[in-house]
Amino acid sequence: MASKYKLDCEILDTTKIIDGIYKFKIKAPEIAKIAKAGQFLEIQVSSTGETFLRRPISIYNIDKEAVEFIFQVKGKGTEILSHKKVGDIINVLGPLGNGTFTVKEYKKVAIIGGGIGTYPLYELAKELQGKAETTMYMGFRNKGLVTLEKEFEEVTSRVVITTDDGSYKEKGFAINVLKEDCKTEKPDIIFACGPLPMLKAVQEFAKSENIPCEMSLEERMGCGIGACVGCNVRIVTENPDEVKYNYVCKDGPVFDSTKVII
Amino acid sequence: MRTEIDFCGIKMKNPVTVASGTFGYGRGHSEFIDLSKLGAIITKGTSLNPKTGNKPPRVCETDSGMMNCIGLENPGVDYFINEDLPWLKQFNTPIIVNCFGGVEGTIEAYVEICRVLNTLPIDGVEINLSCPNVKAGCLAFGTTYEGVKEITTACRKVLTNKPLIVKLTPNVTDITLPAKGAEDAGADGISLINTLTAMKIDIEKRKPILSINTGGLSGPAIKPVAVRMVYQASHAVKIPVMGLGGIMNGDDVIEFMLAGAKCISMGSANLVDPESSIKAIAGVEDYLRRHNIDDINSIIGAVEMN
Ligand SMILES: Cc1cc2nc3c(=O)[nH]c(=O)nc-3n(C[C@H](O)[C@H](O)[C@H](O)COP(=O)(O)OP(=O)(O)OC[C@H]3O[C@@H](n4cnc5c(N)ncnc54)[C@H](O)[C@@H]3O)c2cc1C
Ligand SMILES: Cc1cc2nc3c(=O)[nH]c(=O)nc-3n(C[C@H](O)[C@H](O)[C@H](O)COP(=O)(O)O)c2cc1C
Ligand code: FES
Image 1 (cartoon, rainbow over the protein chains, first blue to last red):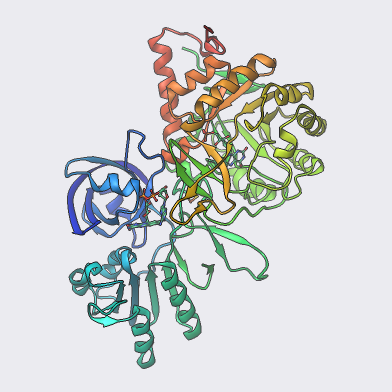
Image 2: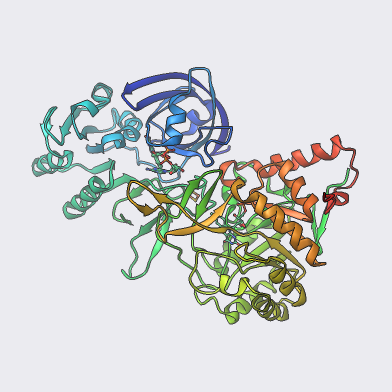
């Protein structure tokens, strides 16, 4: 059985979540059947040459014959994508990535996401339902950017929301609440996705507390299929002076936090 | 209808090969296409010892193309011999190994890798004298008649039983000079073009996007430059020319062949669409059918100048 597909996918549904952030549902039975939590898609946003490379976007949710993804408008490519309508066809490569989140039975799990980095964690949280007691820690800059609170509440045991400015729920960074909670009971594993400063803090904390941690990384991509070695991330080596790389699209996007230097 | 090409003694089913560095050693693309259908596979640039490339970011998009500054990262020839070559041999497609002189980038280092490649069950060797993204070597030899001739002569001496193809850089004033250097040193063929040195600046951060500031431009943006250079080079030398630079489809293949390329290579197109090489082959066949052409060889260099 093939493990990756290139498909023309019909857009089944588009939802504007908040300004500049959209959820798309596309028909992709082959991808939906085999996709794992943490994998991503490479989306051709224009077939007429307005953009050249595909855009990597994580899978948010797998739903029978369809997959959903959520994206923020950042530049030209995501802007073009945001104008697509139900019924339009987009060409998609997927499911991509060989490093995925480890879904199995745990006692207690902490999932931590920052901003748009919370979206790639939803499928994971969903798949952990019934397998673990999960707490979802979500950090946003302010109230206006808080998204998917209800969705995560439905699939996790507890949702903690923080805002940098305190305009909604707890003030501060999500990781600070996680750290506090760990004083009472440590989770078996931490799953993380979000901006680099957050990931660095999570990585450091997991290391200091000796908690296993898997995090999803981003890098600019050429191909998404391991051919161009464009998407490198430095990995830990025995000799700290030695520079060695892995590739986000091929070895990740999810990595064991003790193995990468970010 | 005949689509077979004999390029430097390498028998290809069709003129469409995949360019070095855009296809790895074929594994990623094998999930999408049948590698046996290609004219030839040109491997990622390979050196004697493993080589680490540049820091990220090392790819970015540009208008009608992309830039990269990978820096010739590769796992080394031993890894290729043990892991990738046996796997690649299952496909009924010629294998051309693209190589360079490693971190040292000296003539001796080029000779050493060629010496190893000469003993392998592969169909040809392409020496890269044209990477803009590494400090040592490569471009240093690639821009003059004398430089190309000197290094090609040295490689030729040890490459006694494989076709030798010299890959040239477009970062020169007169492409015919390095082309002649390769021919005079006994190369069996030349391939051009490699990427054009370029820069893209993030205006918000006031910094170049790529980690080493500059990178190699590829894709449709460079195609007209490549077509012109293929035309000039193929008229300056008698050895066959492999044309590349921005080829996306069958029409582009035909354009390069009319300009004088005996076969072509597709690079960045493989990143955008892993099936693009296979689609281009179909496009070529369609063109031949539409124009009642029996043998593809008849279009090579068939452009009529104004
Ligand atoms: C594995 C992975 C998963 C991702 N998942 C999501 C997701 O679920 N939701 C979401 O909103 N965004 C996600 N991103 C980020 C998303 O790919 C970029 O925001 C998007 O490519 C920007 O494209 P643009 O044309 O709008 O921006 P531009 O800045 O105009 O893009 C120019 C070029 O830079 C690349 N680029 C720019 N920013 C990034 C970035 N942060 N990461 C990678 N490439 C970038 C683009 O792909 C394009 O090639 C993910 C990135 C990766 C690598
Ligand atoms: C990501 C990337 C990596 C490349 N690596 C190599 C390489 O290792 N050796 C080489 O000779 N050329 C390399 N090239 C150059 C291509 O083989 C080709 O000459 C160039 O990209 C122009 O063709 P295109 O426009 O079809 O991509 C690389 C190009 C890209 C985009
Ligand atoms: S994007 Fe090409 S190897 Fe990862």
